[in-house]
Image 1 (cartoon, rainbow, N blue to C red):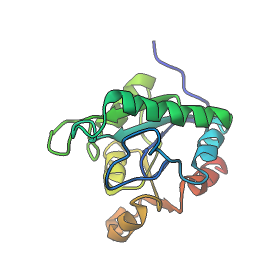
Image 2 (cartoon, rainbow, N blue to C red; image 1 turned 60 degrees about the horizontal axis):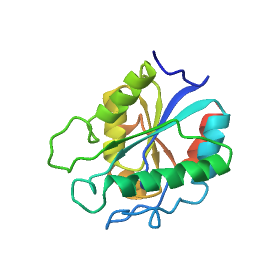
Image 3 (cartoon, rainbow, N blue to C red; image 1 turned 45 degrees about the horizontal axis):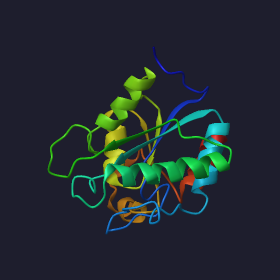
Image 4 (tube, rainbow, N blue to C red; image 1 turned 90 degrees about the vertical axis):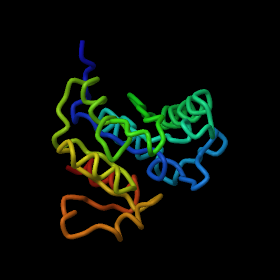
Length: 186
């Protein structure tokens, strides 16, 4: 039986660099997981605006042995608790636990995580907002006909500078709060 979507449908967020601070040394624990300014409130706002908020995140630190599943689950409990305290919720979190050389179908830029969410909700991804800070987030969104939205937090500034004229379908905002403001005005 398919899970029901909120009235505005699905929205997919990347985690590191969009919701929380990213780290070249990887975010390895709940203590290291620090939300970006305005991100938690933005997630709650998206839910109140009628979106089913989900997260799709590459987590190669698992494959590299930098942290275990329990640490990852603790980070996600912290995220959900903070969002709930602000009146929102995250409906589903999916992760790719593989390393960059695993050649799996779920590691962005491949669209496997997005397709998993589409199957779970029995919905098409055409036009679904996918908010990320890296080129691989944008590539995964474009591969399934979703709506790619780049934020300048995390790796976003570097990603923006690498875009070409062919990347004109990618919307760009300063951060998750700015992207949320635009989406909730539609």
